[in-house]
Length: 477
Image 1 (spheres, rainbow, N blue to C red):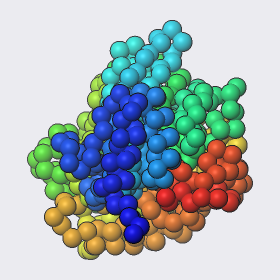
Image 2: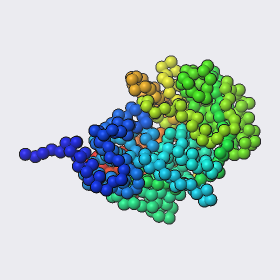
Image 3: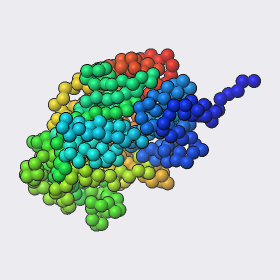
Image 4: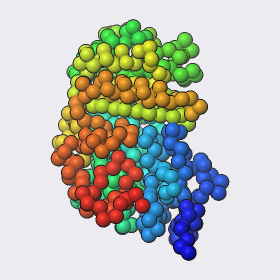
């Protein structure tokens, strides 16, 4: 009689094998802390791995990779866990959980930082801002450093400092074979090209070395709030002002229904649909006041919170719009420009009778982002002037079908204005054609060649996947 291995017996075997040389904590379904550890930020993702390996260092990662490969168990990788598609957790797989790896070492003389992959941007910024230094770090402070960097890294400082991946100097990476590589412009240069925008397709990064920039701690930032009857004129005027703006100024328009208790808004704004334009001036305060005055004068805001603040406070200012423990669904598009017809379509979809509570983010790019050569790294579409992000979220007890349908209708209406590209960190599970669109044909083929070289069996497939050209063994063990 042939005994067919069960999930529990496979999990026990993998656990015993990893435990032989593991310093972190191993969690199975029977262990306390398992349910909390398996959770992604997006509660729409409700999956149950066989085992969670909570690593405390690179050696733990190597051990987990080697034993997962030996036992033919699929691997997911969790950093900050701030993932809408939820690739960080997989049913009946091994979750390699990096969230306990939170070290960050700042060199204020060289203006560099060495960061581990479990950090969120709130944790990273707390250390770098002690020295008045920063690197582009997303829009909300709960985003993970690792995922944002590997997919590109759009944030408040990008027009002045470039994307997060533009500021990556080197990385330590564990390959599908369990080898540990130092990757930089001088070592494994082609792989370094690929991890700057290519996501987690080529290995697990266990440390990042960033170039930092003088920022703050005091900056000029805040939000202009407009009622919906002013939204069209406000978006147009912001677009026109930004066409002449210096790199130090970044703006982000967000259409949202203001939640109850939002700390930045008075109670009379709660539960209303509004346009907010959040601004960051990462330069001399007096110069920033003059630049922002153009926005203030064009369309008077109903609420103006712009003033002297800290970069850390700015990073946290939109956190209430993206709380953990809700269900999320998203679509995103790059826009070549923000033409009047595009603005009209955005507003019509957002304020339609069948619209749901959600956010529409219109992020101005340009500046330093557009001045780096297109072929410098895997990240693509530097010529797109805007990123539009449509995000629906709802309580786990609600029926999500109407929220998902709204994002899909909205994205379809905006497709005529798309530049043809998409931000890989703004993708849900949308299929291989959309992953290709994140890179374009030339870069995509180059990434496939890298996959052939470093992961020919597609061991790392739980990501926005770039499959190898031929697979001797399926990544879906």
